[in-house]
Image (cartoon, rainbow, N blue to C red; front, side, top):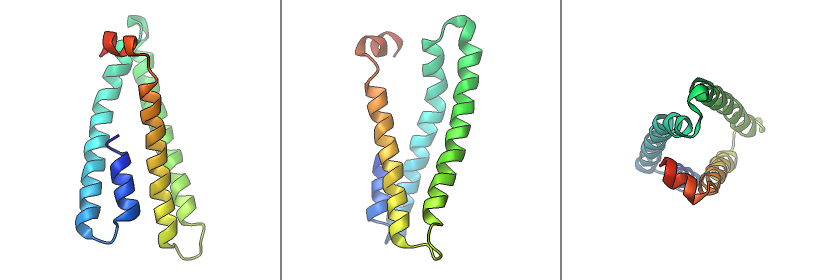
Length: 118
């Protein structure tokens, strides 16, 4: 959820350097939390013999997602001969939407599993 708010902030309040810095700071904090917590969460769900596979797949999927996501947003912004503000706004909204999907996916984990592994 931490990443949804900065995306919305960048989409609607990008007229001030202060708001941009606040949004980017929150994005950095959220990214740090996810990067630090995700391997531990995944390994806690994996059978002991599969922890290396799970950690490696997490890294691979994160790298692929970062590459594909970055290029998709770059393609949206570059779709015009001269980048327009509206394309940046659309990109920030798309990133926020993907973050919302991630929050929904995380909440879809059964509560019993979250309690047992949390």
